[in-house]
Amino acid sequence: MSSVSPNSRSSDHVYWDQLVETQSRAGWEDLKLRLLQDHLAHAYLNSPYYRASFDAAGVHPSQVKTLDDIRYFPFLTKHILRERQLARPPFGDIVAVPERDIVYISASSGSTGVPTASPFTGQDFEDWMDYEARQFWSSGLRPEDRYCHSLNFSLFVGGPCVLGAQKLGALSIHAGTVPSERLLTIISQFQATAIWTTPSYAWYLGETALKQGIDPKKDLNIQRIFVAGEPGGSIPETRQRIESLWGAKVYDYYGLSDIFGSCAGMCEAQDGLHWAEDHILVEVLDPRTSEPVAEGERGELVLTTLKKSARPMVRFRTGDIVSFTTEPCSCGRTSIRLKGVHGRLDDMLIIKGVNVFPSDVEAIARKDHDFSGEYKLIVERVNHLDVLTIDVERSVAFTGSDEELATRFKGHLYSVTGVAATVRILPPDTLPRETHKAKRVEDRRNGVWS
Ligand SMILES: [Zn+2]
Image (cartoon, rainbow, N blue to C red):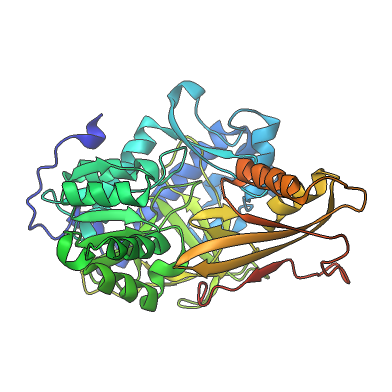
């Protein structure tokens, strides 16, 4: 596969693709418009879903004359992705290529536990890896580096990002998610210079090393830590704590299962995340009015792919509350920068980088009649790791053991979400149920969404 073919750039090149990365804002706008027009036409011609949805909205790709014209097209939501996938298994009718052209899928669980698959053609995958390599290069990774990829490989869109480091020419260590002791051994044995994990895990791993008598600053060789999956990487205080623990720089990345492993990432200036503008069109909208907000203001991130042909995503509502800037960056790159993910529209929780919805818990608590159906989630940060505790009530009729009931609940939760939790069984009528707005999530982590 050419995505891992040798890279011939000299390591002192500042840019991976200077022409693209440093073009004028007008250049970006022209490029995006051209790509958008072609991509919408492809979606309309080849995806039964888009043809029906554009027709129903009375819009046609040929009407797009400026980037602002995207506003006339209908939104796409996670709910629609799931519905269309269930209606036309296995990948749904949003897909716009024959299945024989699909070479890779990632998948994410979402609120009902039904994984939605994100398909890629060979070209989509190549485009992603080229972007991934460009992003790594902007963060200072070079062919001389030894890069340790410590993300999950199982259907997770972050898994293949390791091939971006390989395309760049770095020695790429496909570590995956292994126990901390094993990971520290790998980092130490191969003298890795860079690693990718979640922010909380980077912190935990550093402290684990210290407990074993290894000082990450002195005894290990990590110079760059890439983080994603949690807001911490864009919270300066968190980033600085991790940096001082490791004696390394921390670069925040933003990815989305339904699009790319990384849609944006920090350059060496570490001032916001440069966006992949030649792959994804960004809108930031007021979640109530769906009108664009002014630059720098917070709004919901709404994304339209510009090249990903297997399953075009048109106006996908991410539910992430973000802000952007078009100010020039000191690195010379001209792409817009994500100033951070400030929160979520819904009450989704991210536990150790895995998405957990209260509705997952509700579904389990209400499906099994040995439970009353009432529940509460408590999220805490213990030793820098997110810990989930779930309180559930046994039903009045249940006469078995609480321990067995808790084990059963934990098993269901793990099979649906992949998250391990402490489950406490309470007597019936213990949890508050006074109104339909009962607070079912107690987030005791400080500053996670700051
Ligand atoms: Zn920059």
